[in-house]
Length: 543
Image 1 (tube, rainbow, N blue to C red):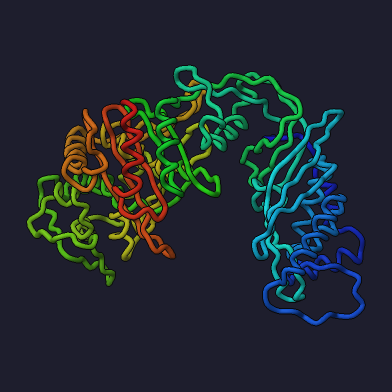
Image 2: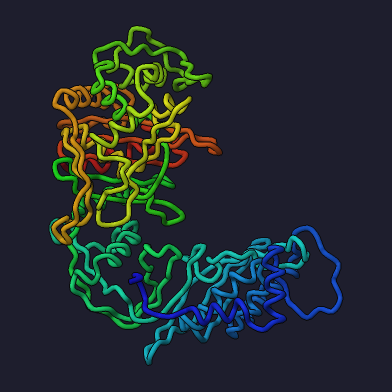
């Protein structure tokens, strides 16, 4: 059964798509041209060019708002540059979402962008509640018609709507939950903002299991069938069921505060001895749970797994030679180190690891097989088999067997390797304890989920990894971020170059006693610059 509000929206959308014959034909042509426009003109008008004038912005906005207020879905959509999609959403707005009495107040615009406030009423089976929110629109020139049109974005209708989303009102299919942390403290979106999407997922999956009863609500229904609805307004309260999680309020509070300092950042903390997730936080404009679902090159944090591969395959060990040369060439691709790194032809693996020397690792590409990293990731670290059962959707990491230059690039966390903070926190936990404990945010006992399994690492490999990570944390590239952290500590920095970005992504992972954490900041620079302080802040909470 689809998670979310129980309503039927097919009729409303169908009416928009086929309507009357004349409107439907115009709609198809407009969609193909990427423009909207009003029907009924007997003579083609001269096609204008250039940005819309202030008068055009005012006129288009006024007509658009007037049609929206009157519930005229087709007319409102005709003033946008994506009539078909806009019409379907406006129809759902009035029919499936039961939103009426719309009044729109425009604010002071800037150029072609106009902010506005919507006040309306949501009514369903005798229950009504006021709805108020703010949004913005931008007027653009139609590419083929030359008309001034509203640049269509779902967020015009509601700021939380994204592509493929719609609005529905009705009885919730999933009862509300009262999620609590490992000590019974209640977790709310108000107190922990980045938990919002996660609480939605937990509700969608465990609402019925938690024993609550559904209420009535206005919600966003997402295009992906597996995504839980996002509640916007509650018309009738349901009875929440109590849902235990593995989160720690102290770690979560620290994670929330830490990511606020760096835009586009995500962090996850786990307990290595159990695999339990202690904190997960994101500070992103798109609201995406990149901490669990992100797929990005992890940069040099990958060298933890690469070093384990080299040790487990008998290629080298921490005190074995790993020369740090100015550059290294593998199958016509040249690899460099961070700017300013002094070469050391006599470096050991431990030193090259602590300094994060790329060329030292790339030179081992001759000694590893195409699938060596893949097997290590799957068999010992539990990554890349798409079988984690965390309690909410997650990406389980990807280390594909890649030939050519990617064999070397994968070793330093570039190439085809994809990870997220959840994955790297787990890698760190496995390196620290030797045992792979699949991360969970909801206790396995709640629904008898079968966790992913891997054989883990030998005591010898763990000893070497911990020694190298400790060196990195105390005198290597992670030392500044980890300064002042007492106890058993270790860390690894990373910076990942991504096509199209002017600045590399910042990665950092580390542990302190029985807590491991990993963070990523898009375009944050070196690992210790942004991701490092985030991880250190979470590690300070205990462990």
